[in-house]
Length: 206
Image (tube, rainbow, N blue to C red; front, side, top):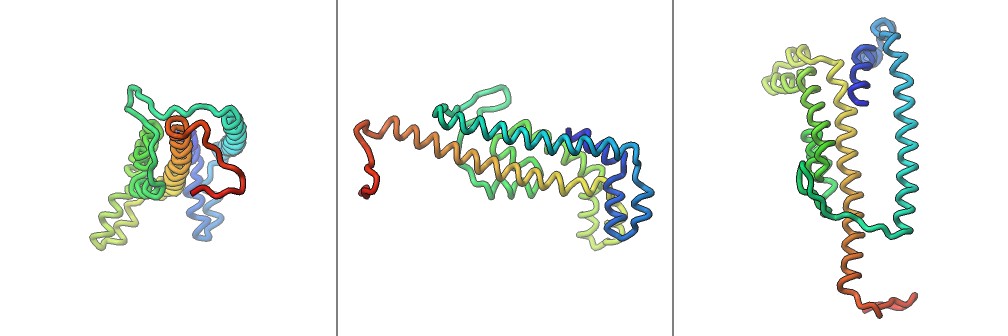
């Protein structure tokens, strides 16, 4: 889906039109747009919104069912890619790593496939936007040259990439922490809590 969105965006010159519109040059923004590709962009965009909403509703229903059934959480997994385990991690640290480089936050929480995809696209965006080259020239004080080397169409891919990487890393860390606490609570109750133990409503446990 991301590759499809990037291709359509570049072919339709959506980012370039956005730049001209930000500058107040509306006629130029209209001129650079490729309507043939732009019309393909619209249904894909609508489908992505609808599908994400539908999937979220389904996942919420599955969560409710698993809570009622007291479904067991798999806290340890060993696969071909790596050993993955349920652990409590810092969501702000995950967001910070994603801020430094999109994909590192996902790597921090062991989402290897997502991390790989995000890192690959980050490298592609960095290369074609010449962002790192522009930053280097900016540090050297060559502001005009730094602006000239940048490719605005590719550069405008970064807000969505960074936004996704930071949000995804943060939210998944928070949700993983909830699963960790739930599994830890279940483990302690099963192995260390006496079967006769009970808390009467309204009483204080010392």
